Length: 87
Ligand SMILES: [Zn+2]
Image (cartoon, helix red, strand yellow):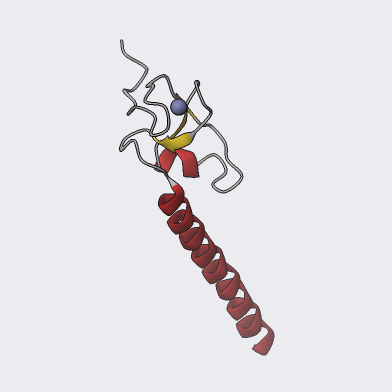
């Protein structure tokens, strides 16, 4: 029974005692899971536990995609509203 997944060493200090981040301001509870977001216990650096690199690019992409999706959903709802009101 191995519950803990192997994480890549910290890009800042080289330690590999990072723990998964459960919640972030940018991704809620889902974002950090998708990006394998972990936090180093030694220096508090947050990075991608799979690649051992910074997650900044992933966070930007995630935010843009999330924004696009919510924009589409809002736009869709607005369109439905207009259609319903025109009937
Ligand atoms: Zn570190």
